[in-house]
Length: 209
Length: 209
DNA sequence: TGTATCCGATACATTTTCGTATCAGATGGA
DNA sequence: TCCATCTGATACGAAAATGTATCGGATACA
Image 1 (cartoon, rainbow over the protein chains, first blue to last red):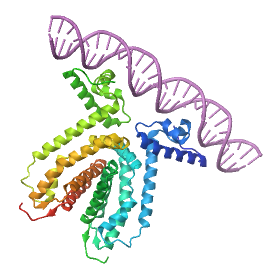
Image 2 (spheres, each protein chain N blue to C red; image 1 turned 135 degrees about the vertical axis):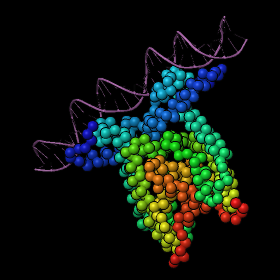
Image 3 (cartoon, rainbow over the protein chains, first blue to last red; image 1 turned 180 degrees about the vertical axis):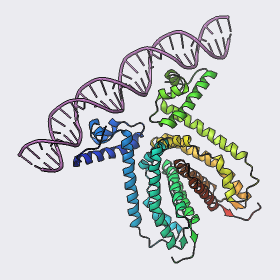
Image 4 (cartoon, each protein chain N blue to C red; image 1 turned 60 degrees about the horizontal axis):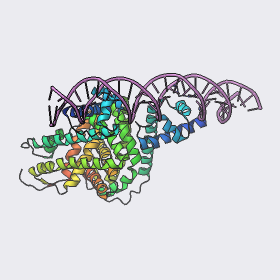
């Protein structure tokens, strides 16, 4: 029941992490709702005893796993944006092509996020968690995008609005792309939409390139 | 196992429908994965015997329910679009304000669609179902929107692209609005994004109003 | 090295769920 | 009205999942 140990050992951390990793795989394959404690334990190479020593329930594990992955994802995002070569950007399309690869469209993660969203809509407590994470994502991307736009002579009057728009477009188009991954037209239209949104949310000021 | 009756009676249709209705409620409340045959039967006022006489499994029911609701939703959409008063539309914002109410943002339905999406990503056979439905939605809305835009002097060069964009924006912003339903700013930015997208995908031709 | 503490495997009791088989009653065509 | 057919409640067995209790072995710290 109580999963907080008095003395934290190295082993415990490893066990916990393996269970978190197994959860991602199992939930993606079976869906969270259809997954069981035992399936996660089997995949991780442990037994239920280890599980209940580390987590209170499947729900508990789901939340912990989702938060950890989200944090990692945002960290990776920041890193990718930091290490970008911004020299070659000359127009809005260039901004899209530079930034898009930093925000991967991942099948596994999308499945899990879909279910977590449904889960959060049912549990008011989780809504705040999702909202916070969305703000973190927008907060990481928007300043970088705005800076790039400025480099090509465009100002962004309302960064918050742009952030919300980018997240919405990303989520909405990701579903379309994953449902038809082999259709390049869908991916092209996605990039197109990003380009038009960036253009629509910024103003040509004719500043230096 | 075989759920096709030799003679179709009125009663059977009613039973089937009540089970379909109950499924919507139960799946929305508990999530599809955590729902059981018995919960659906209880809600519908039947026992498991009736269930297995009408459906092969929970999966079967989920698909049937989703397809029925989707069809109804699209029919309702067509009707709403047909019965619109298009006289007062003078600009792009007017188009948004006229069309938006026809596509409701529904909490219950969104939960179910999220889970169905995850389910479809796992089940290649269901992808086609989702894709077909998305095309039907885009196919219902896009011509109407394009006609409205023409009325205010704007042409739409690529209706397919606009359709995909509208669906993506709708889905993406719906999640944001449902996670923060009491925040009017989120809804306002949603309408804003629609307006900018419509503007970006159409060209001013200066035609008659 | 000693030992207090923690970790996690095993076993178990309980509860839930599933799908089928059965059968009394309802239904609707002749 | 009659009766072949369909409908759906009940009962049942098998399987799966949950959470707990126990206990040998591992680990951290003095």
